[in-house]
Length: 171
Ligand code: XMP
Ligand code: MG
Image 1 (cartoon, rainbow, N blue to C red):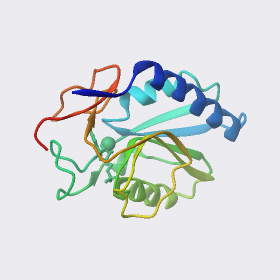
Image 2: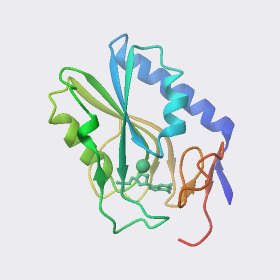
Image 3: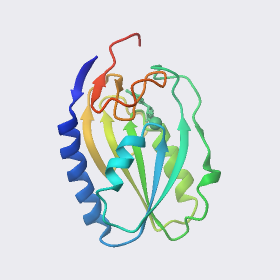
Image 4: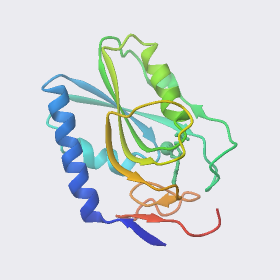
């Protein structure tokens, strides 16, 4: 396991991105929709830096099995979204990879007559995107490697590492 992004680097970038988010919304209330399970640690760190009236909704979306980066179906439980009419929505996601998950999330949310939808991602994996979608806030751009830690897992392990590492086991 090789450290890709240290705790200190994460802290600094999350600070900066949180202030960009604060500037974007002013004092408007925001509904944050976190995409589980990978967003967990990022979300917890981010919201404590947001001095805004926020609500939080957590949505389970899973398309991955182990480190496999293709194949399985995307499943989202959107019945938890409830009434978002007129709300400013910020989707918080761990990684923008192919773009399928975020495209699906944005479509589900836009169907609910929201005031706006924006996207914050912890990482954007370069060279993997197949669906056109632009996140509004990005903490890190990373190479096409499988990463774990800071909420991200390999087979549900390593989410508790305080840094982000490249998983060098079997892919
Ligand atoms: P798409 O392809 O829909 O995928 O943009 C986004 C989801 O894929 C997961 N993902 C990873 N999870 N290490 C992980 O633990 C990785 O390197 C990785 N790359 C993608 C992630 O859950 C994200 O929500
Ligand atoms: Mg995820």
